[in-house]
Image (tube, rainbow, N blue to C red):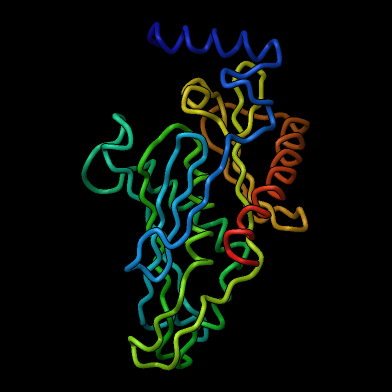
Length: 260
């Protein structure tokens, strides 16, 4: 470990031992959240989300294609993430790297496993023609917690989406059919302190990470563990509770923007 991360770890650990964080948040408190929909006029749906200084834009495009053989009456979803170099000196140009692929998979799993998109309503001709939902995530500024910002931006963009049936000559345009959303909340652990919505500094010293997506009933719809450290059973319960509590607040903000 280089000297700079060592100093950063010592500083954040000393603060945590006093029950403090560098930005004066509580351990179970998110940074301020901003949600703006309709950010990309030419997309079928779009949203810009800021969590603290982390900023992400998600665009939705709709296409027509063939269904999978095992789901002939259901639409299809595809998720991709792009980490452009201007968002962080750690991001490089070129094909998606491991961190971008992981981000897309975590967002995709949270949306897919909760069945938030009513894919059965995206069938045009059973076994022949269905709608494909393309979710494209673009990181503009990186200051920690990409998972939650990307998930929230994707959900907001999906709620903003209109299926362009007229353009494809398959009927009238209609809002993308959506159910109640799962909300993703990420916590990290360092030196026995567990904090939610980690800043970039906190992520850089983290030993382990846990992302929990919960629905409006507080049920877990997806979980993703990262890094090499571990959580105790009690710590996992603590993370889940903080995820449920924050998920309720974030869902209310999403509903306000989505007009629900």
